[in-house]
Length: 196
Image (cartoon, rainbow, N blue to C red; front, side, top):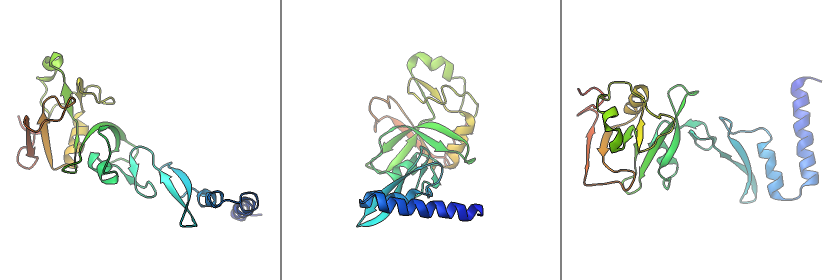
């Protein structure tokens, strides 16, 4: 028996066995997940919708879409996928799909905007930060974005710039985002990555 015929017969027998031994629609829906249609190691979840067998995919961090086939390139992608997403640490997929990074995403649900933290530090760390302009590589706690002492690598900042329109600097962001104490500009107007 050829391999493909053998695989087909296993699926056919599994299909028959499911129908014989499981009477509920939900159990029959498991047939949809025999060959996992979900991508990027996502979990296939069998479902019954309007009396029909179906499935949904539970995506791993860094992927979205019906089949989890869309890599999340930045915080805005998470907000588009889930308008009620909560601010926190998320995984993004870089241009090389095998490379991911943890980033802190802040979601502004009123304006439907997302911000990515690239640098933050408490007053006690000010001296270690002031000698490194953005165009110099000085990553700090890059895999664990935190407000007290964090700076993204130059490579990550360049990646984020290429997937963003503007930047913003603010104070005391971790306690409550402030609308009265910040500066913001488009990268085309003032590129903080090249400003000296």
